[in-house]
Amino acid sequence: MGYAQLVIGPAGSGKSTYCSSLYQHCETVGRTMHVVNLDPAAEHFDYPVAMDIRELISLDDVMEELGLGPNGGLLYCMEHLEENLDDWLTEELDNYMDDDYLVFDCPGQIELFSHVPVLKNFVEHLKRKNFNVCAVYLLDSQFMTDITKFISGCMASLSAMVQLELPHINILSKMDLVTNKKDIDDFLNPEPQVLLSELNQRMAPQFSKLNKALIELVDDYNMVSFVPLDLRKESSIKYVLAQIDNCIQYGEDADVKIKDFDPEDDD
Image (cartoon, rainbow, N blue to C red; front, side, top):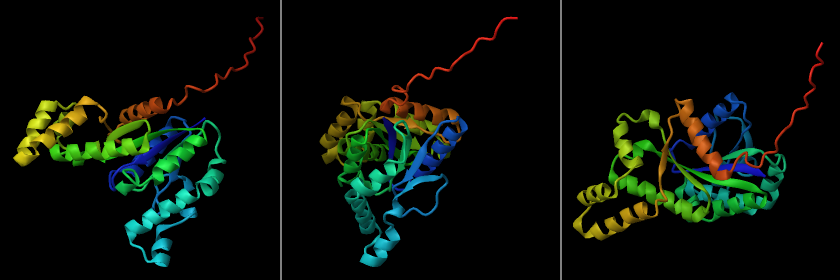
């Protein structure tokens, strides 16, 4: 059985930086991890690329040949990937062992994991190849500056959870850039009534029923929570990785390796 992280989130949320830091951490602790680039527009990498969608199709070629813009071109590239799951992707996956750990660095177009079925079909293909997959949704912690942005982030994350139907970890990235940690703490363990009060203060009165419904959705089902990640701290990276490993049951099926032991003869 293989293991995989699907790293998603809005553009600029720090997905590639997360993948790079995760790779460096695993290299430090002697753990093997392979990072896969699924962004056809990517140009620079701070990690060794194990698989690269640009070997199949690149955004520059699509824009030049078909006259598409960046967003339309990227969607075309991802749909082309979807059409080649049984060919290109299967051939690439065959290069890895049953217990290998892959991290897929995805593009930041939000429609890819909110309503376009490309990544959902991609995930289903991984499952058929006997991979345990976890969605890792990154959200810029500097985005969480007020209640309206917090609710927006929760709804975007919830949309991805519903679309992908995967074990899901939400990460607040770029915590090292946050100047006032208390502002973030208020949203890590939110009080529903406080959130509702703040939301009503920010919104027009006619939205009060909608505000109440949104807060109840976040609170009652307790489906959306965030794990802060500070890449300066190894302990923070280790904690996040442990949460993800638990989601995909990494290591639980590992065989116990018994080392032969020859006792020395007593003189």
